Amino acid sequence: MQTNYQFDFYSPMNFSNYSLNKSMRYQLALLDNLDHLTKRHCENVANLTCRICEYLGCKKHFILYATMCAYLHDIGKVFIPHKILFKDGRLTDEEYELMKKHTILGYNLCMNDEKLKMFAEGALYHHECLDGTGYPNGVSGKDIPYASQIIHVADVYDALVTKRHYTTHVNISSTLQDLIKESTPPSEVVALDALSYSNSGKINKKALNALFKVVIDDTLYEISSTKEYISHLKNELSRLIQIAEFDIKRKKQKSEKGKEYYENGMKSLFANNENFDNYMNVLEDYKTAIDNKNNLINDLYNEVKILKKLKC
Image (cartoon, rainbow, N blue to C red):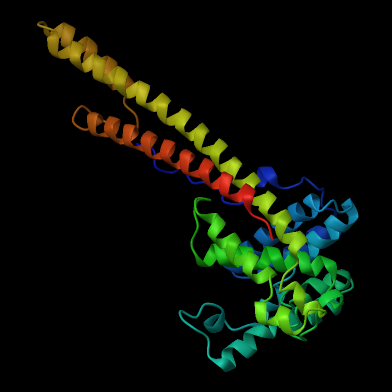
């Protein structure tokens, strides 16, 4: 049975096909200096940022700008020791303070390069929160550039998805519900300081609502991809059923010539490591896989219904 099917959680089919000029390719080449996981995270955040901007109705030049800022937002991590980046467990206070410096280090790297200077804000502000509780400078509200507010939403979402090891969008709404909490200030803050900008919570609500639409798109893409894979599985199942039918006819033959005829037919239909002894097990595996994928599609459709009701 074929087992190399893997769903791409961040579908490139949903990513806008903006052409990248030589200058932009130079900037993206910097990501090759990052470790694989951080590089992948930067690509994911850029993907999400671009698509959030589209749902927000941003102009194309701003979308390009925000996307490039997102690609470079974690570039400062090239200066963070791997033993801290990949520590298995909670960081100490000292380690966490060093980790937070990737924002300033990334900003300085960009500012010292004429080709990157205009994108430096992504590195500096992507951990700042609207209520002033972020870092490195604890700025709040409109002091945080709009592009960085969008990047922050994409960054937090991808970090949660990675931490929770999602391989499908089933139950992804629980992560988004956690982000809704981030967009809403605690009730005691609202009561004490109703006129403060901190009343906005940590993250930009409009960007978060746009993220909901992006995730719905991705979930529908997963449904489409899974249906295509089921089609493949059914084709393979049909082939195996034909083998089984040949086997029944083979066993009914009285002459060796007749048996050989159907044996050759079976051999011509075998794939990979299939043979006379194991093909029925493979056939049952395909049936099980089809049932599992159909159940997944039902779960994903239910998830879409939940996602469409989310608001912040």
